Length: 381
Image (cartoon, rainbow, N blue to C red; front, top):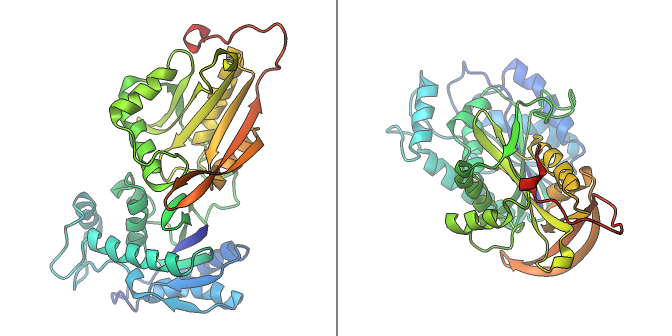
């Protein structure tokens, strides 16, 4: 696995309009210490940067401390807006995010920015695979990379991070496929239990409604196409995905997590094996919206799902993980699951073999006599 820490530059001096030469402001120079402190224990092997001075200077302090050179990669440079200065930057950005082909006469479209940044990134991943890498970058350039791997990332997300300088996004890669993404606010890191933990965010966990299924399908499709977590080669159709949920509905709980009307993730239990003697065992599935890992969504879902399964009378629950999947392994251990077994080379996807790991949580004792599990639809509140 290759880990890349994208470092959006510290605050720059906007009095200098030369995009390549614009330096950091006094505040930006001071905030470089946040970058160095964060990266210090990450065992970084390679430091790369956009050729723009503000990006280079944001990571050069860490590189000097670590005794590493900083190599510039021209294609990691920021978007060229136009030959002049844009007064209404928000309106211009909003139009670009609405139309990735839109650009000013002497500028670049977001599609063009994404193409060169992704090509440069894939070249780095091919040459530096298995290493821990730092890339000094920019708000728009980084946002097009995030969008490439998470199509739900859009203008609102871009504006939400506009004031965060510096800002770090960690991505884990298997080959050139993104296997995990974490957005890190260096200004709040270490000051509270974690940005957006479940106790801090006004999230609602509720039962599945029919209108939730398309959003759930979109989340699942994202992971199928990019990661080995699911052994599906291609996403199921919406009809097939709906049928999978229907096979669990009634007998097993299906929960979704939403915030301000937006679906952020889902978790449900389903049949482990069809033979009747297995009826006290079930399996869980949990997915969160791309880019929302480690924000408390999975925790909130499992805090609803697991006690419900216990009340129903299931004795144990399995989480069957396609690996590598370090984030999900950490999450399930945190929720009380223990690794029961590892089966090597169980599935072939993305030109390599992948293990399956069984994580298990004991819910109720396997006693005699024992009643059959209560269907979720009959459980009541």
